Image 1 (spheres, rainbow, N blue to C red):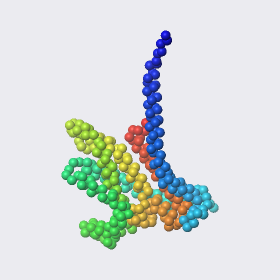
Image 2: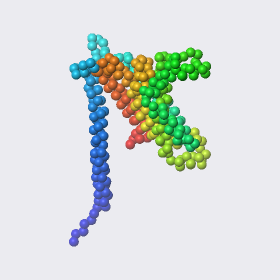
Image 3: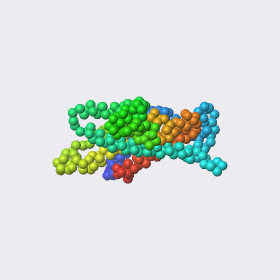
Image 4: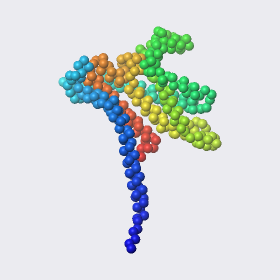
Length: 322
């Protein structure tokens, strides 16, 4: 009678094969559940984006959108009779890029710092904390157009309550045209944006604070570690992923800012963002091809900056080698 001997690695291989089969089954199930959402996303987002990119290579006009010609990269950059033409040579476009980057960098930085401070305050235990948490979300809940019109009246040089209050305190000697002054317009827009969206940052950071374990703080309290050192050595590293998520969501909104700037300052060159510039080309000048090219470049700028931020954030978190 022959005796069959099993290899010691046979059970391990069988177990690994079963785990691999289960993993593949879960992946297939995940794709099956995601398929409807991906289809809808492709229809409502992918198709308009593809059309916008396509029109960027044409001379389409809004008054006669059915008739257009393919002109290649002429909307972006073209050399004709010794001169360069196109979007990449337009000083107004580069001014809009600069305004957008300045607005995004300053507003997101201020909102992150203020949101962190507010989140730390709301994370403490005190009477009425729940009511205060709900009340602080009111600026974020107000529609952007409504808040922009409200602040437009408050910043008015003749009827604005802000000028009246500052003149009453002796800070100003005469009314200031906050949204019309080239030196103050961008600062006014940033101030309104910080007022509106800081609660959003505070909410996301507060969610991260709520997830922190209490053991670390109890150990630090027993060891007599200073609260400031605890914040920088314990709290800040632990909530860094939450801050990264909050910043990337806010950065995406800031880079494509349109409604707040357009309502407060319209097409002013001092505050014109890339979205306002694209809208001006599409609607005011009825140049669908040129405006679509501007919109495509806006999409590319947002995509590149987002990828750079995510990669840099992963490296800082020590995930670059995974």
